Length: 142
Ligand SMILES: [Zn+2]
Image (cartoon, rainbow, N blue to C red; front, top):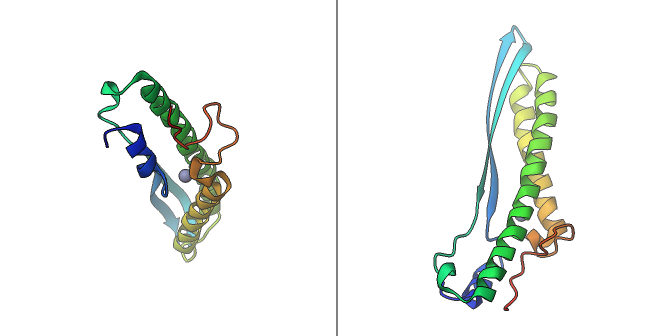
């Protein structure tokens, strides 16, 4: 990756960053009753780097920074969904039994993954983001 033009190619097609969620769930039981749920979520955002940005012309650097802010805004959207829905998941897990808790856990992870995909469909993975003050994740040649 040498110039912004090369980045445009990289950015087209698939999302150039990733917001991920990992879960760790444990529970306490008394017979068939779930008496406590310990749900830990780990959130992560991987962002693209452009090592040569500092040696490129100022307009390209500015566009790169704008793109990164728009991309971060999009990834934060995924994180917002994860945080909000993990709370919903926690409540659902508390209402389970020992027999159903693992199924509910699996279904909830799928449900949250689905909401995240829906968000990507709605926003074109950031390329059609409407509410971002820095615009979309489409890189424009200065
Ligand atoms: Zn996305």
